[in-house]
Image (cartoon, rainbow, N blue to C red):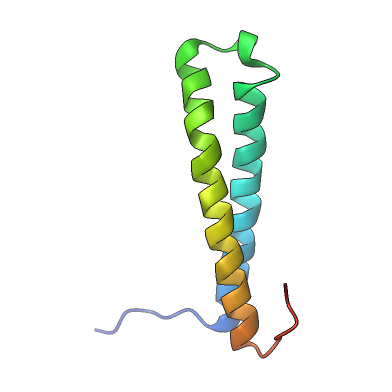
Length: 79
């Protein structure tokens, strides 16, 4: 059985969703780690600090996926 493959439009959507979710994760992590840190326990603050670079990495992956989808669709001017 062949694995299912995503078409370019689905890949574009996947990239965009990844960017949005990881962007929201970065915002939430930054809020927990910095301005509202006194409202959270030490474990949650540590988690916030760890989640920040991980969500940034996923944002970058989503951006590259989005660019690849634009390239597959023939939109070479996407940035």
